[in-house]
Length: 396
Ligand code: CTP
Image (tube, rainbow, N blue to C red):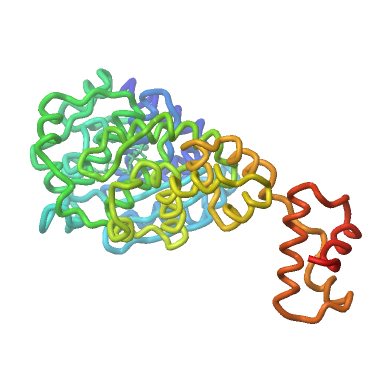
């Protein structure tokens, strides 16, 4: 067996989803591990998911994985949780107890127009490898016997740590590869081969829909070093202030979204709401980014907040991501105190307590509670419900 093939099969057998995949593929022909999983296993790192290409109809493999069935019955059944079939590409995603497995039939792709999604049809494995983005992602290992099949230059490029496209039209046909190149360069620490670098420099994201840019940006923002990836992206309204982003990241609490915070910080003042909308993030995600865009104004208001209750008035409705960036722009201590402490402060009493004590229903219930919270924040109340109730029922 090929040395590399053995390495991949052994590593696969040691990984939970890999073991399930090997069991499900037992006895089947033409089932190959491909793409990033092979690349990562050959580099000795853990793959994020398993990509599988089947040279025939993948239905049997998908069915076995989805059922968690073991063909020979030696191991206990796995527990497949979800199968999503994507009819357009004859593909499926199975989330097993060990991780995600993407399965597709070996195919060729034709791009009706540059940047559009491709038209696909079944094709031999060599063509499937040849349609891929970079040589290092175009290596396949046959799960039955470890045979390695690779696009030209793929194995030497992996050894040398080099990113190379498979043909001259690669970025033209699929400009998302420009963004993928930036991600791989940073994550894998690979160099870009000279001709590939020239092709990338001569290509642009024009023609790519906002939704596809948005999907790639999401991936870029979830990379281990998103700032370095964003800094390497051309053609997008981004400016990286690494110092600001690091400082904001330190301030951001665990329930914050570092990806949205970084996107907001990097695009602040550089683009429009229409551009942001075109990325097709959710409304809630967009609101976070928009709030981060407003961080300068927020920082000014925070700097003018003398008491904790003033800070509450300024920040009470702000997402934590915007507060962290505002803090990084100047009022760091105010941001820290809000994020780590003050934003959690709540009253022990509620409107019902005031009604029960005889306060008539109406806007003054809310006003009394707000006044009491401000006093609590400013340390003017003794502890406990009684002090709160006395404050809320007392004179303004
Ligand atoms: N691919 C491609 N062109 C794209 C997207 C994907 O050729 N625009 C191919 C590549 O061969 C890639 C495979 O499809 O390896 C699977 O894509 P994806 O899951 O996005 O990447 P991974 O290979 O899993 O790599 P990673 O998750 O590490 O980014």
